Amino acid sequence: EPEVTQTPSHQVTQMGQEVILRCVPISNHLYFYWYRQILGQKVEFLVSFYNNEISEKSEIFDDQFSVERPDGSNFTLKIRSTKLEDSAMYFCASSVWRGGNQPQHFGDGTRLSIL
Amino acid sequence: AQKVTQAQTEISVVEKEDVTLDCVYETRDTTYYLFWYKQPPSGELVFLIRRNSFDEQNEISGRYSWNFQKSTSSFNFTITASQVVDSAVYFCALSGKETSGSRLTFGEGTQLTVNP
View 1 (cartoon, chains in turn cyan, green):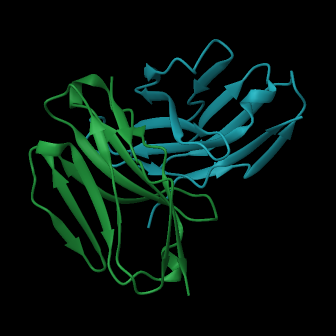
View 2 (cartoon, each protein chain N blue to C red):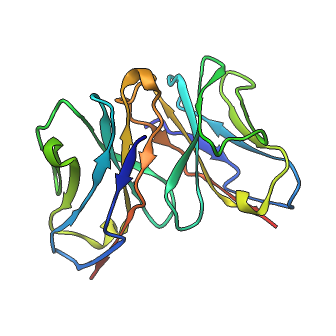
View 3 (cartoon, each protein chain N blue to C red):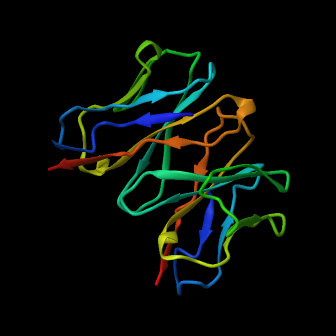
């Protein structure tokens, strides 16, 4: 069964450094997402992406965050200058099409630890 | 604004017991979609089920069943004859109508522990 792939599984970074989290969505999916989950808390929406542009973003997704689809398969989340509070599990998801009725399929997540 | 409430933070049962996880939602959309996801100890999020707001037919899939009641804004999830492998955090989630984007709004999650 096709799945969303995320790398790395765990990233440790010094505060203030830039980090890029990578995702390979399911191949025939057109809509991509990033969510984060601070340890022990609920999953929070960050951004959705379609047709090479951001469709929707939350208040969490401020100027230090950016997303990109650099080629036909990868989807990345960049955090420019990491803060301690960016420590969380980051999930990438994809769906066949936009629309709330489409189930989003999640990757296994990248655990980001900021020191 | 959308909101999902899972009032049960933790539930602990003994294997073979039935267990129901509660979910209450708030939305202004007339068309919306409800989901349940499972997060086992390994951390991934596993899609379990999706229901449309215009389809209140309840569903049974093996040991899982779902009870959607629009009148009470609830979308509860029942595991029959629970097993140790069912131990996980279960998240209820909500998404609005097609034209308003498709962000998922998650509840706080319910930690289910099934003891042998």
